[in-house]
Amino acid sequence: MGFFKNLFSKKIKTSYKQSLLRAQVSLFSVLEAMDKHNHLHADVIEALEDALLMSDVGLETTTQIVEQIQLINKKHPITNYESLLDVLYQYVDEILLESKPLVSKHVIFVVGVNGVGKTTTIGKLAHLYAQEKKVMIIAADTFRAAAIDQLSIWAKKSDVEFYSNPSKDPSSVIFEGLKKAKDLDSEIILIDTAGRLQNKSHLMAELSKMRQMISKAYGEIDTHTFLVIDATTGQNGLSQAKLFHEATKITDLVITKLDGTSKGGIVLPIVSMLNVPIAYIGIGEGIDDLKPFDKEAFMQQLIHHGVNDGL
Ligand SMILES: Nc1nc2c(ncn2[C@@H]2O[C@H](COP(=O)(O)OP(=O)(O)O)[C@@H](O)[C@H]2O)c(=O)[nH]1
Ligand SMILES: [Mg+2]
Image (cartoon, rainbow, N blue to C red; front, side, top):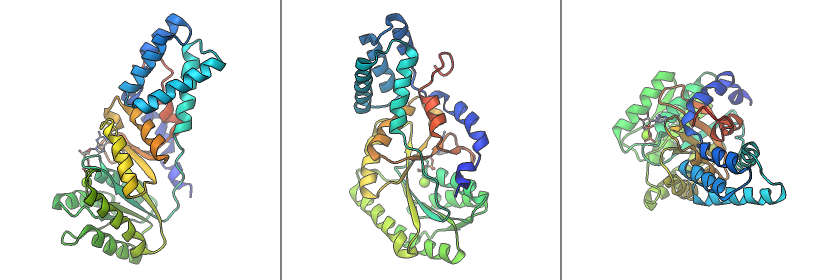
């Protein structure tokens, strides 16, 4: 226990701040409206709604946030920008969950649509874990030879075990790979899957089958299902979250590409719908650009109290 939490903990805060600058909800016009009116005037509400929607918080969650703020305002009138931000901050605090430390031996089954960063995330996770654990990567994305090659290169970079078999179907690859992992006594087993559109029901059914294969092949082992969401995808991320969760219960989220978006707000409706923690965030293409989710640091960047930077 504990080692996941401590990894890189010193470096996290500064790199979070730098990488998430663009992901902030842009609150400058809210500040202006609040400074002008000194109460929760319709202009303030409108500016806030615009800011949240622009950041991809989505209509439903934006409405909930605004209703909550209006409710609090009735009891304790909000008269300045700082107290408005405090209420907003508290709301986000309630939505976002703290991720639980992972037990020492486990499988991570990684799912998501094409191009979100599943394979890259596995490469980065292998690198992160390989410092202290025996890691094995299973490439169950057997549709494209290039996908297997891409992952075997990541495995070599971190010098971890790798298994795939392009002539077998994904479930058989998982079966064989897990047998090998058991023989080698691997501690962290990362399974990559082919990207699939959430509305292709036969592909989603295949995913459920693959997930079931894990316990069949290995027996009892702690298993996490990571859904990788590209933060730049927009509202389609919500449909991805819903349908992947239905096909194979998601236990954790990985939000990638937070370095290149001004729409970090998408995490709020997704987390509030699935009610699962964000385990990691991706903040670049490099091997070190995956960070354990730090709720406090993330919130501070998303709902930024400062006026000048990041706006
Ligand atoms: N900027 C940025 N790019 C990323 C991140 N994660 C993945 N990518 C890029 O997204 C593209 C697709 O990644 P890949 O892992 O192949 O996606 P997959 O289809 O889900 O396996 C690649 O060009 C990655 O380098 C991230 O956190 N930030
Ligand atoms: Mg891939």
